[in-house]
Image (cartoon, rainbow, N blue to C red; front, side, top):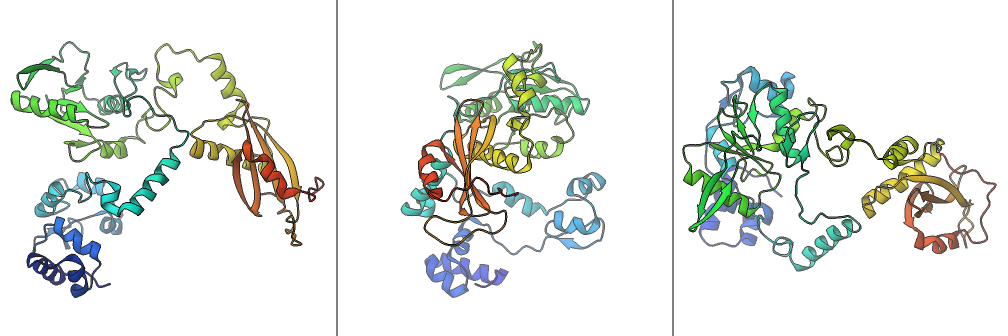
Length: 406
């Protein structure tokens, strides 16, 4: 395939305007059909607008991380050091704001075709087997955090509170009496709306109301639009990870602050999973204390041998990824070992023998780990596979052999 130039783009767009189909255009300009199709959504035009790098003086459409790495400076440091210098042209910035993904709102079948779309959906479904799903996906983890002493309806809200405190800026929370509740009118019907926070000192914008969302539901967006229409005297900023709605992108805040704030909530480190860190007046249940003391990293503290730890970790990963279970490994036992395959004369080399391990969990479940397919590659199986796995070692088990050190 060829390389896009301004000339080939102009030619492709001209052919497109004249009614040529994408397949014909791709052959003429020597580009892929996907690239040609993407032009429909790209506002291509000849643009000689450039900006100057404040360090070396070279001209660019956009000054990015790759160029700044030559000056041993990050993009954030560049913006702080040269606040009056742009990092991309105005036209390029407008293009970013106006760009909409051509696939947004389409089904898998519309994007990939019926057969490929069905295959991709089935693959995603397989990965979700065993994973628990809350009644309302996206519902925040609600509670008053110990480190902020502020009630938050989600980890996103709690983290925004932490940013205010980290920067030494004041804010008004949702439950503060100074945060008034507004009445909105929707098709003649009155509905109630209250913003999440008020920015008192200007961390984002002084005096602005803040709406903090992990996911923007249609009803939420309707309220925001109604508020902006009916109370134009107030400024309402949306903080969320979706750039279609966000005035302040939460992902950028995440990148900037997650390593600066000790109790930043994300992943499995949150109010729900680590109440000992976040809940006020929290007393750890006896069972949780027992598990923490006896199962470091979910593996029994008595399992110390390197290879046994490897087998336990393999099973732990399998359970978390494939079954959606957070298990506690209680014991690892070698139940069969051989240095040759059943019905074949080939022997494995040295300590890389064929092994079958039985892994028991604190919850009473049993799993099996074996390398019978490839000598040095281990796979994990549920207990229903036990007899099938043992048949591999039929008449060949030799427990005097040494198992491998992986």
